[in-house]
Image 1 (cartoon, rainbow, N blue to C red):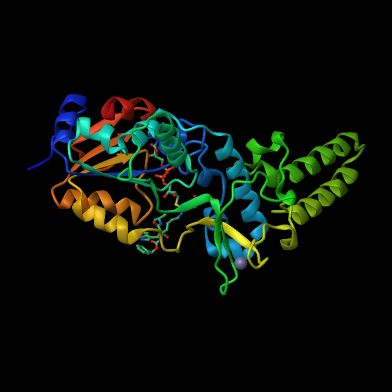
Image 2 (image 1 turned 30 degrees about the vertical axis):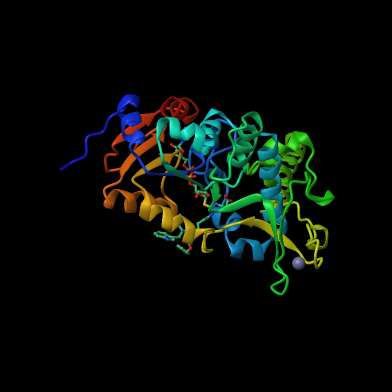
Length: 332
Ligand SMILES: CC(C)NC(=O)[C@H](Cc1c[nH]c2ccccc12)NC(=O)[C@H](CCCC/N=C(/NCCC(=O)O)S[C@H]1O[C@H](COP(=O)(O)OP(=O)(O)OC[C@H]2O[C@@H](n3cnc4c(N)ncnc43)[C@H](O)[C@@H]2O)[C@@H](O)[C@H]1O)NC(=O)OCc1ccccc1
Ligand SMILES: [Zn+2]
């Protein structure tokens, strides 16, 4: 029997009110309203950068400098960002006393693929504002780690700790003007190219004859070739170090090919869920993309919050639009 999709908040509230295990899987679209670029959307990170160079262990081995510049720019951006109304709606729903008004005796699990820490910051703020916070409040599960965690690369140490220093070390300090550029925007790497091109263009305009222009072209290409991919390389000695053993630390995030975090806990909740809220994710990265299928196959309801819906299956509820508008309405 094909599923009928509705966009009515009333019907959603009715289903939510009888739900016992509410599961949320969220992605970059949740933080889009806070100015954090998504990955695959317009101006998305992977649109402008080589994911294999910047989100794999091979990329790390190839250049810790490049990786740290990439993640430091994203740390600076995430620190400057504020949670939006979608984060706050989920944070309030994490508090049993608030949630049980709408979904009595319900259990709530919020899993995020985001590494920006905005779900936690929203929960912190809501808990400070309300004295409803209690031990049963469910904390967001960061299955792909956090950009504010650092992990020691020394296998006999493996120390992990929270670090939201900005800059994380002097060598990675970026002047404010450059933050936006560094936000994964390849401008950084191409700035040197740009300067060269501008200089060369100047000389080229002054060239008097073709022979001279050709000479210059050769010079330009030679210089461009040398600066191909010539990122600003920070010596490893100046990159962030472990506070325990002094070895190089890496961003505490999950790269492609690495195991996601908290999978045992997540899989237990997926097995119990009777409704799945899919918030601001393209559902392209696994195992995160598979949770909703497991819940659907077990007869669970599905509600999608996204600015678009391109999948070949129909959710029970589809709330199209910026989730900072649709989610508070649905959970409010
Ligand atoms: C590309 C893909 C095919 N590859 C994978 O999935 C791989 C390989 C793989 C594993 N299983 C498979 C099965 C099939 C095929 C491939 C695989 N997966 C892995 O390697 C994973 C590890 C993957 C983690 C990689 N790290 C990230 N991030 C951290 C780093 C960093 O961020 O730098 S992934 C990163 O990309 C993903 C991006 O997806 P979205 O968040 O959805 O963002 P996107 O831009 O794509 O979409 C945004 C959406 O929002 C919407 N939107 C935009 N604005 C708004 C708005 N305003 N409101 C609402 N919605 C909005 C848009 O319309 C859009 O739909 C997120 O997961 C994010 O965390 N590891 C693993 O599988 O280990 C084994 C294992 C498995 C199970 C148990 C144990 C071990
Ligand atoms: Zn260490």
